[in-house]
Image 1 (tube, rainbow, N blue to C red):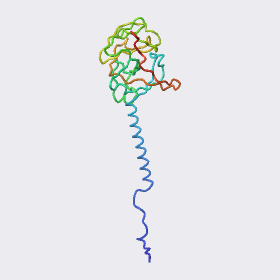
Image 2 (image 1 turned 120 degrees about the vertical axis):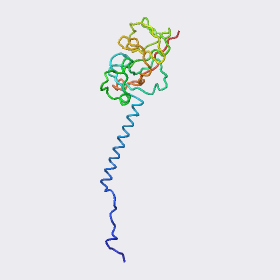
Image 3 (image 1 turned 180 degrees about the horizontal axis):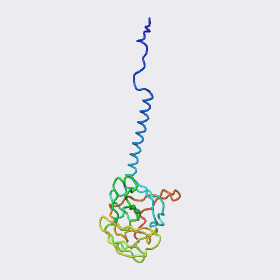
Image 4 (image 1 turned 90 degrees about the vertical axis):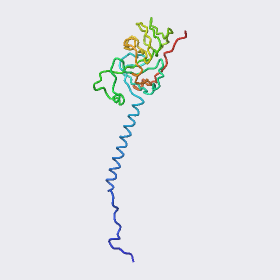
Length: 214
């Protein structure tokens, strides 16, 4: 005969109510999503940055208001190339704190802006600008990208660890001809692509500043 005494009846399992388990699972998923988003944000900002072109110093290559994606990893081992378009901190401005630059935070007390120009002279080279032509070690550059010929002249010998940079809109650009050489350590990254407005989307051509045949 089966014993149907109360103590032998099935008892409910002792544990966390289903509602609490679901709540904990939901909170854990939210936390994991937030942590993943933070990690992705940090990684993306370590390898790249987004900048807005301000002004007309790089016309006709880059126009005022365009957004450009830059690579932070391009110059980890140096390898600066003539013709590269770079974003950098001008040497006459104080440096920006590491975390502020990493996270792309607005400059709360920072009244200075990064610049975007083209590398023209490399360390050890002599740059001469004369009669609208740029020469590297007395060899003229072919520069199909500039807006107009420069109306200034000068001779500049680039020190080690420095670069000579110019805007493509030569007569409307605050660059090395005006404020001197650019320390390599001030470079934020190399411009890769115009991504906004979408109608202006374009891969940015590099290494276009080539020496003419002697």
